[in-house]
Length: 221
Image (cartoon, rainbow, N blue to C red; front, side, top):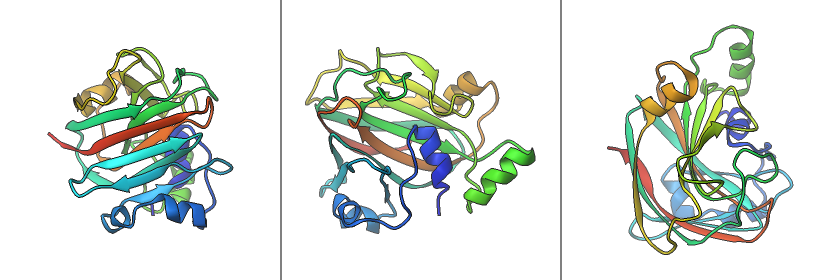
């Protein structure tokens, strides 16, 4: 079981109830569940929809909604590559402002803890698999391309990197390749620990509207 409180803090949202609702069950394509993906909804918010096609492309549809698709992704930090395409973009937003940080799509990379002491011990109580560490969020939307900033909900443990801004073309597949280890060092000033989980998300619950994104799931390059 992933550490939900840690994950949602790093992604900037509140924990939902542990028992999935009927709406949450309908939001997740069963084939994604079979492939070890799990839906994390946000308490009090409409849930984004996650689908899967025969080519392995995940489609996220967020209509005034938000949601995270999470799966274990263990291994050392390296270069991560994926392709994504936004069909309908979220309204202009600011990834650094609480309550205004919508985005068309995001890739979240979550790390094992490198911290000791009471804080780590407390977190381990909430994270049975030991996922009590930091997170990097790679965004489509939320500001200009190239902007790097602390996660406004977890500034010590989360960092945001905007890969695609308002200039990004819609309905066009765009490739990405990021150096996760280098981005971690730039954000936190130390070597990256192992990666534990990967999450995909879209978010239009603050400013409203529709975001539709298609993502070929990331893989180590």
